[in-house]
Image (cartoon, rainbow, N blue to C red; front, side):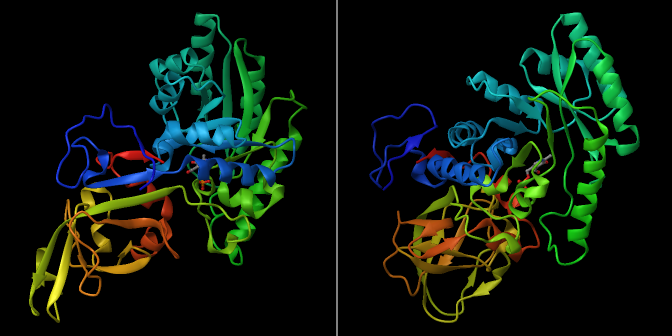
Length: 398
Ligand SMILES: Cc1ncc(COP(=O)(O)O)c(C=O)c1O
C-alpha cells in the first residue's frame, strides 16, 4: 500500500473490519494524485521551451480534478512560473494557501466586486472589452494601486476575447490609462488538438498568422510582457506557437491532447481512481444484473459489487464497456453503473474478495487505463472525464 497523506482532516484510532481506521479515506473509493508525476511532466514540458518562453500551469477546475493546490505546488517545482485559473474563487483559494506567483484568471469577470477582489488578491484578470478596461481603471485609481491585467484577442475560437479589429485601439487605451498595466496579450487555439492533416492544421496556422499580425503591429514592450497562444496541443505540436509563454493543462497531468502527439515525451499520468469491493455474490446462470437487467449471466458467476458509481464521476454511459484492474489483470464491468456502485464479473478472478481494491483509472502492472479510454467509449474528451470526479471521492496525495 502507498504511503498516503490524506487531505481529509484528522485521523482517529478506531479500526473497522478491513483493518482501516474508520476515518481512513480509503473505505470505499478515492482518487490518488501523484505530485511527483506532475513535477516531472512540468520539467519535461519546460525542456521543450526556449529559454525566453515560460510555462503557465493551467490548474483550473481544481487542477483538472487533481486538487489545484497540489498541482500548483508540484508544477511550480517542475519549472512553471505562473498559474492559470478559470474563476476568481479558484485564484483566491491559491493565494490563501500562500501561493505567490502570478495568477491569470482565464474566465471573464464582469462585476466591480469581482474585479476589486482580483486587485486585492493580486490576481490578473483577462479583459475582452472596453467596458472591462474602464471598470479596472476606475477601481485601481480609487484604490491607488496598479492593476496588472491581460487582454484576450479572438483569433478564431469565437469565445472570449475582443475582435482583432479593435485590439490595437484597446491596447492603446490601456497604455494611456494610469494605474492599469497590460502584462500580456493572448489568444486561444480552437483546433490544435484535432487531426492536423485535415483543415484543422491550416486553421491553427491561420490563427497564428492573425496573432502574428497583432504581435508585429504593437510597439516593443517591457521584458516581462508576454504574448501567448498555445495550450498543450499547441505546445507539443509546434515551437512556432510558443511565443513568450505557453499555457499547459492536459499534458501537465500526463496525457497527450491528441493521438498524433504521442511522441517521446514520456508524460506520466498523475491520477488513479481506486475503489473497494464491498460485496461478493455467487449467482446462477440466467440472472439479470443491476437496473434494467442490461446484463444477464450466461454461466454460474461470481460478481463483485464495487463502491463507486456515477455520482462519483464514473459516467453511466460507460456501463458494460469498461474494465477494472486487479493484480495486473483486467476484469469486465457488467450491467448498469448505478449512482454509488458498479458490478464486476469476477468469475475468472477468484482472487478478488471483499475489501480488495481495484483500479478503475490508472496503472496496475502492465495495464494503464487513461481518461481517453473512457472518453472514446462515450463520445467525450479526456478533459471532461478528469473534471468529472466528484468531491465525494477523497483526493489522496501519494
Ligand atoms: C484559455 C486556456 N488556455 C489553456 C488551456 C489549457 O488547455 P489544455 O488542457 O488543452 O492544455 C485552457 C483549457 O481549457 C484554456 O481555456
